[in-house]
Amino acid sequence: MDATLRHDWETIRALVRRSANELIRVPGAAVPGVLAPTIFFLGLTAVFGNLTHLPGFTTDNYASFMVPVSMLQGAGFTGAAMGVNLARDIEFGLFDRFLASPAPRWVLLTGLVLSAAIRSVIPSTFVFLIALVVGAHFPGPGGLVVTYLCVMGTATIAACWSALIALRFKTQSAAPLMQTVMLAAVLCTTAYAPQALLTGWLATAAEYNPFTQVVEAARQGFVGGISWSGTWPAIVVIAALTALLGWLALRGMRRTAY
Amino acid sequence: MRTLAVVTELGRRSVRQTFRRPQLIAPLLIIPTLLLAVQSAGAGRAVDLPGFPPVESFFDFLLAGAMIQSALLAGNSGGIALAIDIEMGFTDRLLAAPIPRFAIVAGRLAGTAAMGAVTAVWFLAIGLAFGVRIEEGLLGALLMIVLVTLAALAFGTLGAALALRSGSASVVQGTFPLVFVILFLSTAFFPADLLLEPAQTIARINPLSFIAEAVRDPVISVFSGRELLEGFAGIVLVGAIGLTLCSMALRRRLRMG
Image 1 (cartoon, rainbow over the protein chains, first blue to last red):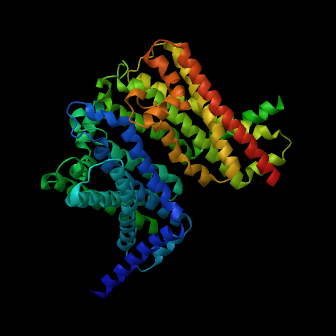
Image 2: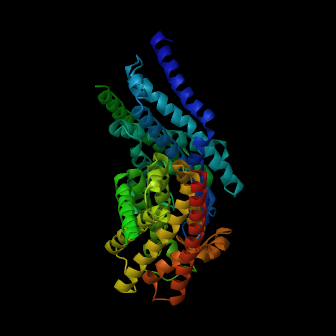
Image 3: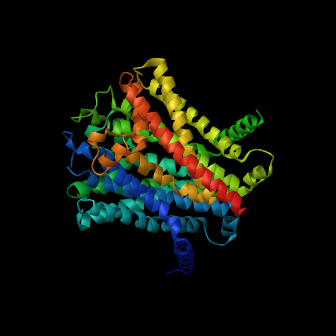
């Protein structure tokens, strides 16, 4: 491996380790991120569980239908939390020191994003295990791989978005903007019911919201079998949104530096 | 008269503070509005389920749920703001001032109640803009605003008690998910008969269900004295518990210095 690349990789690893240290030193910090999607999952399943009796509902088990949504929600919150941490680092001047270091901007962003993607496994796994306990179907190994791919992809997108907001507003007060947009992105899809059963504006919004592809791909194994045709649109969406938001976040970093 | 002036001024400060901090105002308005929009369209076909009460649309049914959610969050936000005041030392300065101690909490609660009224008007405006027809007309709308305001005040006592007890904004903030637990275990979003167990059994005894039904009543049916009384009873129960806890926490804080 080229020396520069090796050095960049070391920097990324250091940033990921720093994020992991936070979890080890303050384990309680992870609790809200785990609790919120779990409460939403259990609550929404208890409240809307009887929707499966509607003609045209694609499964008879609402827990199976809802669990991927809550896993993605957990990933979205994890990505947003990374943005809040970045805003805190900016407020305290630590990020200025990162920017003054010889590490390229893309390395700093990759470190943050990779940390979010890895950390998103914690809340999503917790929700997944709870879902199995309350009777959700096991999606099979293939289904699980696709679901976790979508989870980590969503955390990546959320981290890029939140970094963009943190760099723009430079304050932790922007946290609601980071979280709410991710929540809206995941919920304005086929989160609550299949496309055919959505009503009003949401039927149209879900049809055009790229996150619908991610939700549907993550859900495949829970409500049926997985297929390539149900998976590749999610991969395209994750790649495209990561590229776009990552580029915007890097631009924000360059502007922060001057 | 002087105490009233103190409470009014502290209440006004509390409202201004809420509007100035995005992290306080966003949960009150944006999250309940987002969930109202998404759930009403996402689960809109729920009205076709056997046993669902006769309503024009699921949006009509859900409007009260959004209002109550907002009132609950107003109580939580009020608690967070009070805890920030304690952390920053502002409450200590008020305690040293020649004003009754209860006025410090009452001022914060007045602000929380005012935010409850603001959110009630906000959701009524959204409801009317999106075609909700309030069966009981203007009187029904006013009744809804009064109920949501009082509900916010009652939930505010719980938030204030927690803030006084812990003195930590992050502890009060940490109870944010509990708001949703209480909501999901009530009839705020769905009729009790159609909830899954154990939510169904808990919702039947949850005071929040009675409050939500009372707020919903003027929208979906003709006036029912029983629903209204049960709603007020729910508010009084929550408020009484909260005030007792507030009083205990304030006494403890004064004793410990």
